[in-house]
Image 1 (cartoon, rainbow, N blue to C red):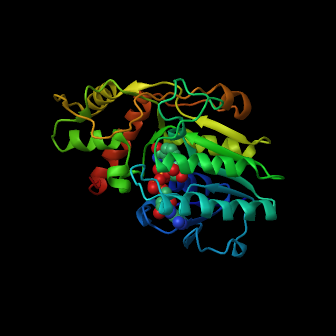
Image 2: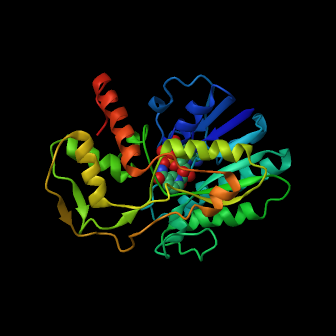
Length: 303
Ligand SMILES: NC(=O)c1ccc[n+]([C@@H]2O[C@H](COP(=O)([O-])OP(=O)(O)OC[C@H]3O[C@@H](n4cnc5c(N)ncnc54)[C@H](O)[C@@H]3O)[C@@H](O)[C@H]2O)c1
């Protein structure tokens, strides 16, 4: 299959491109606004440096698109900028897929649930609380109107794992806490670390995309681990993995809006896509720390 991965130099996109290249012809599109060339070390497919907004899709060939290019900074309030990349460019891509009869898998986000009740189900009322979440919900509305092709939207929960480190401050909380522990600092948490999150290891996200490519059915699906862990628990799992113990530095949450509890209800994803997460927070973090430590022994991880 010809697979087009947009945002393929980013965290999730690069994991997809590298995992799929043995069995598929993979083309990556990225404008490198937050992605990094280093994420694609070992990638042997086609890499196109281009902006989704101005790209002429007609120069491309694809059987399926895995759309992961986006402005992923959830704190950015510039509505025009976020909407132009996350929605307008997506609309153009969607129209091209419909015209050329190409399947489309795109990244939505669990942020659309806001502080709605957990476990979060695809059918519950969305409650997007920031521009980023609003853009993801609008993408879903646009995708629902597409006719004649299979379109799958994934509401990713908190994804972590290899190749996220170039996102800097936007990398997962697991990476931030790992970096703090490694630097000999106290791990820093919003008071009092009892917030619960569904953290999903990136390998499970890759598997979900592969299942989506095989699926005959479209729709919107949660992708999480199906279990929540508190921030305090995450610190303890990391401490065990690194063999250190530190006092936690609790501080006031500066954000007016914050998702305090997220948890994916996976019933719909399991029954339609046959998705079963392979990684709990504990074994996902253990595998991730192993990878980070290996990287460190080769070259310094960017902290
Ligand atoms: N990482 C998570 O926890 C998470 C959670 C929910 C949803 N998502 C969604 O999954 C997708 C991938 O997220 P990620 O964590 O890999 O983010 P990322 O920032 O690492 O990757 C996004 C990529 O898109 C590229 N990009 C941005 N604008 C572009 C444009 N106009 N043209 C071409 N390329 C462009 C960036 O350079 C980057 O490489 C995003 O749509 C994100 O909203 C991620």
